[in-house]
Image 1 (cartoon, rainbow, N blue to C red):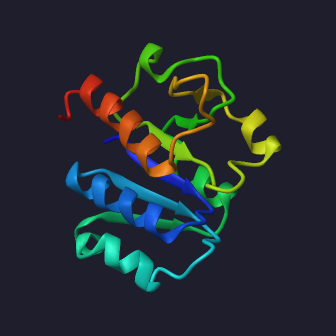
Image 2: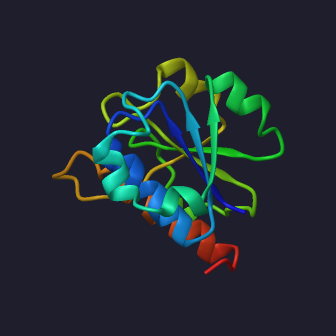
Image 3: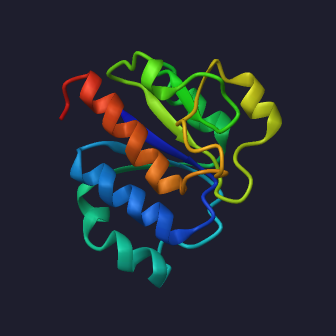
Length: 149
């Protein structure tokens, strides 16, 4: 099944929104620590509501731990710094879509170490999409391609 991974998430409301949409589609969520907030944060629980209980949530102490525990999956970074559109990519059933921090993305070393990097084309007059929206857009395409929708 297609999964979503969050790299050191900053904003509780975005993380909660991602957990909520992923739960609606039966997707796993991988959280790469540390988070900038507690999963008990009221801003987080208000948006996540009761979806925390039905979602497959996996937490990792760092990126190495995450990568070591997901060796059978391709890790696909969503980034504004890729020439390849998510619409031109063939997703596989056990891909993991990696979302960077809202404030900083992923570190340069991590970015350069990943083989698969995709962008979501947007207007040239704008900088980027909200991380939760980016995750939802790319997830919908990955799920569609693999007949999960």
